[in-house]
Amino acid sequence: MNAIQTTRLFTVDEYRQMAECGILKPEERTELIDGQIILMAAQRPPHAAVSDNIEKYFRVLFEGVAAVRSQKPIVLSDRTEPEPDLALARIDARNYYDRHPLPSDLFLIVEVSDTTLMFDTNQKLAAYARSGLSDYWVVDVNAQVVRVFRRPQNSEYLQQFSVEPGDTLTVLVFPEIQIEIGNFFPE
Picture 1 (cartoon, one colour):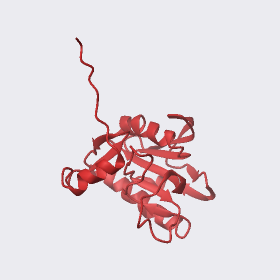
Picture 2 (picture 1 turned 180 degrees about the vertical axis):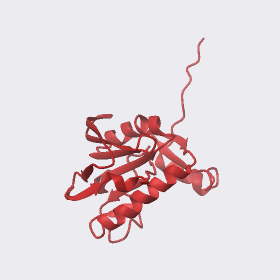
Picture 3 (picture 1 turned 135 degrees about the horizontal axis):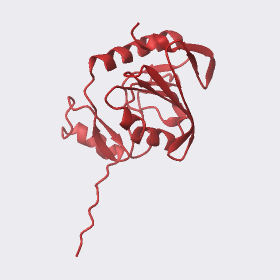
Picture 4 (picture 1 turned 135 degrees about the vertical axis):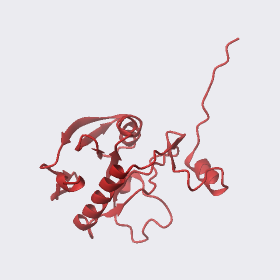
């Protein structure tokens, strides 16, 4: 008789309990995607530099307009709690003291990819699309382009395009704020 193998999926609550009781160590950078605990890749210098550039630039551009959250959890569902490289969220008077941002709080998600491009444009993309996040950007450090994904439907985005240094881009909900892509990358 053939046994069927199944994977044990976790909820956000179970995932947090594992961290609280020490099963998941603080130095183990993890995130929960579709019930699976994923070890996050170590940040190489190019990834860290580009992430820093974007964060600093966005803090100036979106001052008083949106909360800029860098590598902080967001909750997409009861089985998905990623930590995107950057999220633009509604400004919350309590600064998300009692909960992490939900999809209804989020304007933009940015993942910076050097070694994680396939994961960010497949599994993470599907999770973000399923949760209805309307604006998802993947900053491809190696190609020095930003891959933009919009119009989520089920597990995919119907609109996809790329922009490169020299181009400008806007967040869907803030069309008046011009973002110069060249500021993301070293000169």
